[in-house]
Amino acid sequence: FESEISTAIENRDFCAFFQPQLNGNGEVTGAEALIRWIHPTKGMIPPDEFISIAEQFGLIQSLQDIVLEDICKLLMELERTSSIPADFKLSINISHSQFRASNFKQSLESTIEQFGIAASRVTLEITESMLSHDIAKTAQQMAEISDTGFSFSIDDFGTGYSNLSNLHAFPVHELKIDKSFVDRMLDPSGLSIVETIINLAKNLNMKVVAEGVESDKQATLLKERGIDVLQGYHFAKPLPFDEYLKWHSAHLAQR
Ligand code: C2E
Ligand code: CA
Ligand code: CA
Image (cartoon, rainbow, N blue to C red; front, side, top):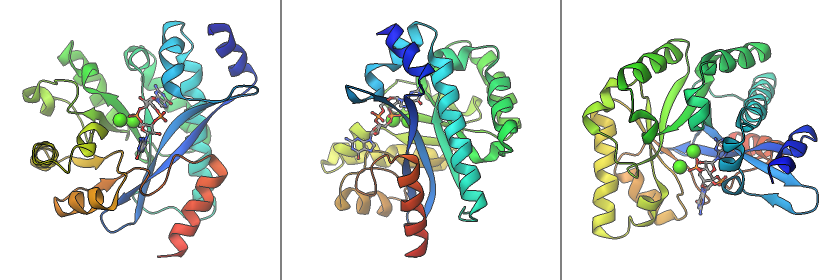
């Protein structure tokens, strides 16, 4: 499988798909880039089946570079066609080993500079567990990256037992409420967890995103509770580059 991944990298069988993110008024505020392996015979292979293997065998950097290049290409295209809202951002998922790599900041910067993209257009999604060791050093590294204009988002928030008292020590701009909580929102206990995370984010001056929104009912409840951003199949599935562009311009035109 490892050598298949290497071959697929050489053959450019990987690419990013993009899932729209919308604010409470239904305006598009960004998109999350999600990697896809388009296998010539097996069809589409989901990331859960290859990310950890790629990470184990030191191939994750190449995959991450593909995603980063794809988001730069998308931002260039949106800028070229002047269809980019002022605060529009693209999010990318950062793996453990990449976050720990000594050249993390340089590799991010060199790619976006090459494409002439502003760091302020890019959000880095990390997980709570990445913040759990060597707090002072991690906070320092994140501050340096944040100073260059990138934003940080905590993905799957609420599933990782993060030390809440440390949260403010890190330059975090956004919390993403995990899909498992959104799924359970129609029960009172599930709803109270979602409300608690929304309030926590507001108190810490962070933006709060709900992921995996699949129904109108969930979207309405989330908006009533003051969610900033919504993402999920209810609005759109992750879309290939060209389909995302079509969705984006149709969405802008319809408003
Ligand atoms: P994630 O970052 O939590 O991404 C959200 C996942 O939920 C995505 O699965 C997305 O397609 C799916 N999703 C979005 N809306 C809905 C919905 O309404 N209902 C349902 N059932 N699912 C929804 P995907 O694309 O298969 O990605 C799985 C995981 O793989 C991601 O979870 C992320 O941890 C990882 N991943 C994806 N792309 C990358 C990447 O470029 N780099 C790294 N390091 N990890 C990635
Ligand atoms: Ca994510
Ligand atoms: Ca997530």
